[in-house]
Structure formats: structure tokens, C-alpha cells
Length: 257
Ligand code: V07
Image (cartoon, rainbow, N blue to C red; front, top):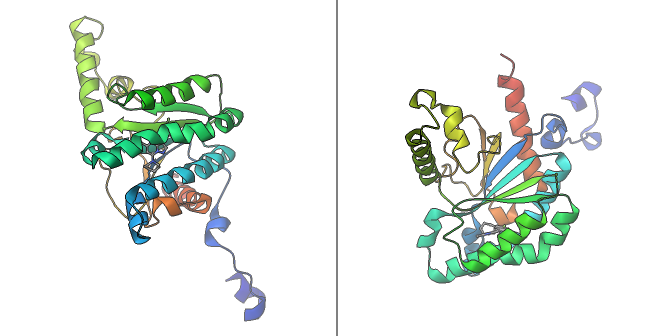
């Protein structure tokens, strides 16, 4: 359009990447949640075992954490392992359960350096000892930081989280701590594992699947969703910016009235 108006010859025309053009450092979503899907498919396409895709997927996290931190994102929640994932072959589950240790073994010093706070959302008790130990060490080692909150959803399932929240509210009603008349959306939010986090503003899911798969059903009630066919191991900072741009454009269009 601009090229036409100014009468530039085809050879002189300036191509503006629509994504970079729209991207703004203002109105960055405070909480981004990502379903990191497509690792197995990425490996299969290359004739590699599924675990090779998981390893590559793990390596992508570093770049996404760094750019989220630079962009001023406050919370980055990554869906690393669902309560349904235990049904996968034992060798794959064993490999996955070693990834927190591997990731943090390599990354914890730089996460501390980059002022990142590591957190976990999910059922901790059912994890193997070595997984718990690795996560605890990272949570403990970064609790003095106050930058980006890197929240790993690990052994997480949303429906079971909601049931636990309801049971916990019932317990408090039973003890006379809450009156049933006062049970509200805010009260249930306070009884979920994410009670100290604001709800995600933006949900990203990679690999072309358009569903929530039992991820943060309550917390995502008002979030913007952004889906891409890109497989998680191929996801990069540019895709993150594309998702944020889409979020910002929707805010501009619907936010006003
Ligand atoms: C996992 C790599 C990323 C793609 C999705 C599935 C495989 C990082 C972690 C992790 C978890 C907790 C933590 C530190 C790191 C992880 C699992 C799988 C189970 F405190 N990546 N990653 N955990 N994948």
C-alpha cells in the first residue's frame, strides 16, 4: 500500500513483516500459558524415537524463557506433563520424568542469574523422588528472585484440581471457616493450585490440535487462545511474538467497548 502510494518500483519496494509491524512492547500479556505439543510428531518426521523430540522440545524452552523475560512477561506457564501422560509407554514416561533434572542441571545457574522464579503446578506427591528433588532445588534456589515466574505444570490435570478445590472448600465449610452463602468464583480460585497467580491472558498451543486437553479449564475462562501448526521443537521467539501480536490486535479490536 505504502509502496504503491509513493510509487516505488517493484525492485525498490520495502517488505514489512506484518508481524514485526504490529508487534508492540506495550500491552504484553502478563501471563502466557503454553501447551507444548508436537514433540513426538517432530521426531517421527525425522525417523527418530519420540524421546528425541522431547529432548529437542526441552531445548526450545530456554529461548522462550529468555525472550518472555526480555519482553516483560510476568508469568510463563508451560504444560510439561499431564496426569493423563502416565498412560504412555513406561520407557517414555521414565525419560520424561528425568527431563526436569536434565533441564535444571543445565539451566538453573542461568535462571538464577536471569532473576527467574521457578514454580510448579501439579500433583507433586506422585512424582518420582529424583523429579521432586530437582524441582524442589530449583524452586528453593530461585525463591529470592523477583523476575519472570516460570511455572511448570507437571503431573497436572484441571478437573481433578477443581475437585480438590471443591473438597477443600467443603472442609472449610465443615469447620465453620466459610459460610456456604459466601462460596464464590473468587473462593474457588483461591482453592486451586494457581491461587497466587493471575489467570493466563494468552494460551498458546502448538502442533495444530485445537483443544484444551484438561489444561487450566477454570483459569482459561477469559483468555485469548492462539493455535499454530508449528511443532513445539520448531517454535521460536518469532512465533512467540506472532502470538503476542495476535493477542494485541484482538485487544485493540474488542477491548474498546
Ligand atoms: C518436558 C520438554 C518440553 C516439551 C514438552 C514435553 C517434554 C522441561 C521440563 C521441566 C519440568 C519441571 C521443571 C523443570 C523443567 C520438563 C517434563 C517434560 C516432564 F521444574 N521440559 N520438560 N518436564 N519436556
